[in-house]
Amino acid sequence: MSHTVLVVGGYGTVGAQLTDLLRRRDSARVLVGGRTPPAAPGTVRIDVRDQESVAKVLDTHRVGTVVLSVQAPDATVFATCAQRGVHVVDLGADPLLSPAEHARLHDVATGAAASLVLGAGLAPGLTNVLARAAADSLGGADDIAVSVLLGAGDHHGAQAVRWTIDRLAERPGGRAKRVYFPGIGYRRAIPFGFADQHSLSRSLGARTTTRLGLDSRVANAGLAVLRLTGLACRVNPDRLPGGFGGDVFCVRADAWRGRRHAAVAATGHGQSRATAVIADQVLADLLAGNLPPGVHVPEQLDRLADLPQRLTGEGITLWRRSPGEQLSGERVEGPPPPALR
Image (cartoon, rainbow, N blue to C red; front, side, top):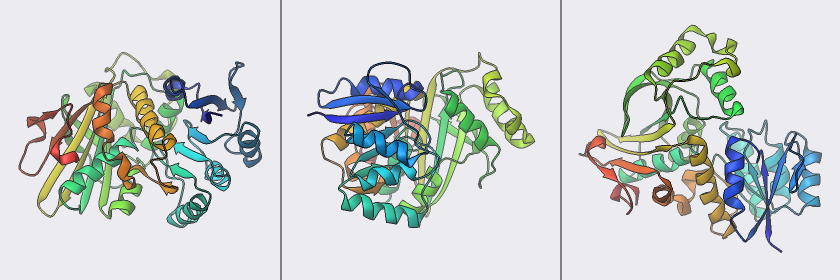
């Protein structure tokens, strides 16, 4: 019997693309789930807020792996899966587990031989792996900065847009900075509450700041205004003006150890597709039995160290700055660059 993968939110912007990728795998049977799934074969109703609903679907359909292409409101779905030995790949952007909860769930998952990978998309996800690569090239890091640039004209899911606007109402630590995004240019990036700042601080022991910018200078200025004025909480995502920017994205990770500095970055087009491709790569490792049991974030998994190189065949370009080099001076495609080994 083939392994059954349940994609919760598999009819959303990212989930639908990931579902298409998974259905190309002969080894996986794919189910699409959600609170209001379309009436079609291979779909199930599931509410990740309700432990009974989750347990019923897992048991009835003998699910082996759950992909969360929705933001889980709490740790209910993780615990329910871990107790049953069901693997999880989570694409959520919010940190849901305290260190103590993470440790407890890790023990449960390890005992049940379940692998749970939290934050396995673009940001968090690829950003975490890039940050570890930059830190490793220095032999460790004191400080890490993660900068994310998104295309203002890209098609983002409604949930993702709402999440972004909600985070604009927060005021995380750090200052806005002018950041060079290779292949795109300089943009002003504002401090933004990505989950990486919590994950990387714990896993790599480095002070971490995360920032966000947009490719369109006009839209990027609007982003800063919403933060400064506190008007983000009054914005209706459905009424945001269009016509600004394109679909380019760039994620950049900088690490410092003393006065030494290293940076790595990845650029591409279509943030939603990139997220689906990244998740598909993580799932390939999981389904092949290459990931250890327990609860992990991407930078903790040695098997994912070459994830950036794998993505070069998917239209993503890698860039690097090793100590003494300029980030804009070297473009890396194909073979793994030394800074990412």
